[in-house]
Image 1 (cartoon, rainbow, N blue to C red):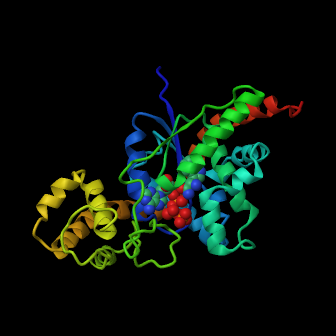
Image 2: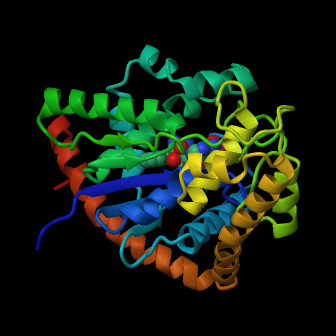
Image 3: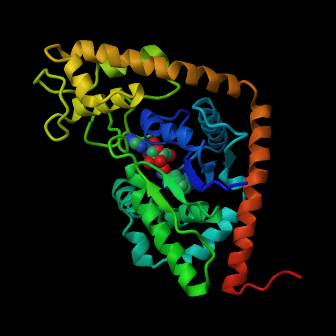
Length: 335
Ligand code: ATP
Ligand code: LTN
């Protein structure tokens, strides 16, 4: 049997629903790539603890995130889809990796700096600082070749590569050095109300966020109200027309069409028509995914069973890497 190269990715259970950036920037790629790669997808609940959470809500968001992976096309019999905290090796390898990371190196991560700026130094936990080492552990435990993520995660994957190389050079080769895979145009979908800021599950206002599980009427309304400009022509220009450009990227990503073809179709027509059609495209894309997700969530015991079986598969791979790492760094094996 030819072994397929490995792929790893994950999302935080930081909301009840995924947003369209997660869908276009990550899930659509995952769905394609699971065919040609041996894929591992996790719901990174330990990462989500870096934000304040209500415990019961976190559990529910974890299930909901997993259900949306499956509803969006991840096949849990083909790919390994599991919950991060079900595989203790993640937290264990993270510890080893923190000992290889410079404190200054960790503080240079943009996401950390952004969050410190947003929440203040005292509200930002040490967990937030070591977040990228947990992410590196996720990736490195599975001898991952590629990591499909949105643009915002590129720096973390670069750090993961550095840590893998550092470990391999110091202790002998334990890790595959992974490559980030980032879609150029769709790697960053912007907030519809603030089209220069990344759309995010934890945005302060939800008016510019398109949720996968939103009611279709709400989704359509948000698109009709998306910020544009006064020029009135449907034309891609990231600098001058960030709002319209973002809508064009969403349109193109969901229909598989090229942006110039869409521009031609709407030449001489206003934003109203364009937005109305886009709303239809998004609603038609989301409706079946939403239905499947809600059906899966109606049977949480079955969902939990699937996640448990998949965690078992993940654990086999992860534990083998961790045992090798423990040996290499000189931890005494338990007799
Ligand atoms: P949070 O606000 O809680 O950080 P998020 O919406 O930014 O959540 P994550 O769970 O951090 O999402 O990321 C899941 C995946 O979705 C990652 O691969 C990330 O790069 C991608 N992603 C998130 N937001 C966008 C976006 N606006 N455009 C493209 N990809 C995105
Ligand atoms: N930090 C990532 C989520 C994440 C991840 C990973 C992505 C955690 N571990 C491993 C790819 C591979 C984010 O999207 N915020």
